[in-house]
Image (cartoon, rainbow, N blue to C red; front, side, top):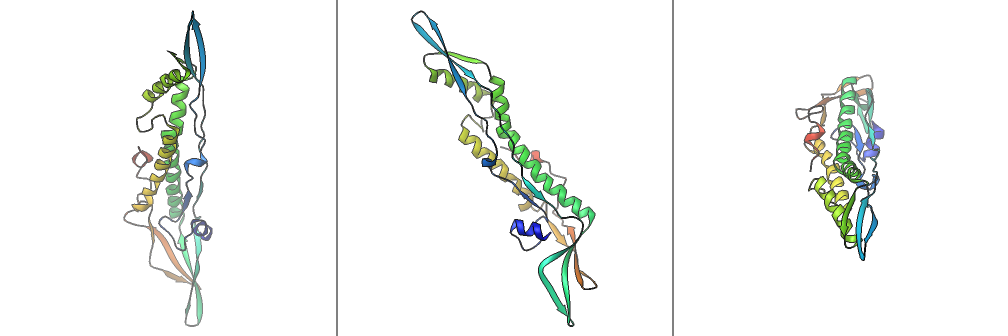
Length: 223
């Protein structure tokens, strides 16, 4: 638990007890829309065709942590009572540990959905056009615009065909997972402490707003 707090820059239990470090769009491999030009001559006229090339993209790997069941010492929390020093601990049951793990998996699922709605979808739609010729056109640029228009018809209007827009949309969708924490869906609390030998134990429990396992990624991550 102390390692999770250190990694998250927190000094307390935080909003969820776990930590998932969602990377930005820069950590993903973006698809590329590339065409090659083919020329067809007919007498004195020259016709240009754009041929769409296949592309790839890749998801990112995000670090995710959750505490195991057991007693976890609260950093820097000691108390002297009657000349005796007591250390404070969080007590995490197996059920709560499993619940925190499920909550962090929800963040990972959200990130995967963000990728699938952006880079992966763009990759699939570009590859759906791969090998097709678009034209005839007077110039290579005109032919490429025909191919780009075909891609635009296949993609959601929110994505468009601009690679810059794809990056911005992925970052926006990735950030939507924060909703789970800001709305208290992953919130944890502590029950009244109990004293065990030289330990003051704070059992970790859920709160009235905890919604782990109840809100799918399809309700969190969307254009």
